[in-house]
Image 1 (tube, rainbow, N blue to C red):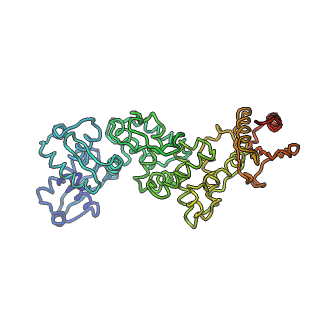
Image 2 (image 1 turned 90 degrees about the vertical axis):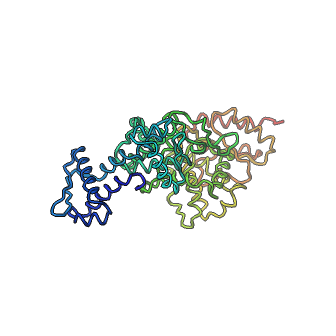
Image 3 (image 1 turned 135 degrees about the horizontal axis):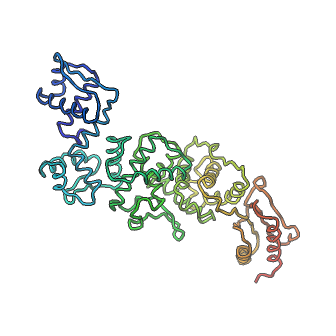
Length: 481
């Protein structure tokens, strides 16, 4: 923090902090402790008193009988002084020029600050020494800051949050849009932020918006998405990100991920899953996560999971936590209180197990102590994080013994003739254990045909049940070439 201010302002802060410890101190003792001359001390005290008057604060310093007294008003806050000193510092002119302007130069900053270019150059050299541990650097032509875009955003967030906290950043930023975005995030996540969280997000969203509006970002800073063709994670390219921060809901998720990454604030565990999702990249679990997501696609898991960052975050969280010997399954047992959830559960549970035990995932999957808990947890994530109202629960059909060609033709016939989502299982094992069945029908009159199906869609009408049986009867009594 000292690097942000020049020597004079640092001394004023030291005097202020020194006086807050005790409202009455020996003047000469303060001079010795802070290494300040008498003339400089009186100058600093006069500037502090002028500042208090400018903000209608009745606080003031005075010297009396070789003692320094600080008379503190009820309205006094050190925060206001910190903001004032920052906004009148060379650091403020430099960082605000870099942050808020498309193009800036040393000459522009020198003119605004009413100092020489040499003074600005010297201040930038000082700031660059301070920025070395942060792996950032200010360059002169054009005047800008270079380094990892994520690090730059974190730096500005830490800087502005330290200085302004509950105050608005003094820039022409559309706070109404940022406020609206936070409300949208709350609705999307079914979560209400505290006042501190909202302020934190407000600062972060404004930083992201400003950086994006200037195209000051790099590839690879948006949440991963999946493509149906490759079923592999891809990172959005720079040109795919809209200029306007508010035109794409992916930015809502990104705002949360990045804002809570820079925070030591104990936010809710629900949001911590976003942090986990972002931080786990390039780890073993991250690789396993992508294998599992691929496997879910290959085993008929609904495609709505592909674009849901929260869902992916929860799945990754479960994968990592399931390797812990203290992994508790009771938190993830789904509440099957509605027929719709029961239908979805029965239609997906078997495929989830098969997906997680597939060849690419099996080495990790079999190390998990409580496999059922992991499967139930991922299922629960599907339920709670997905728009299942637009998802048609499946009719699950098991086909045995028939030749592959006949299976393919039966599947094709059912899918083209019946207006429901139908999942097929062509393995020898039954897709469900009896206690999981909602209803099952074995066509005994077709006993010579080793074919059975399970209706796990309670929303299906009785008329459609009859129609389905007619279709199956027709297929089984038709010669298949």
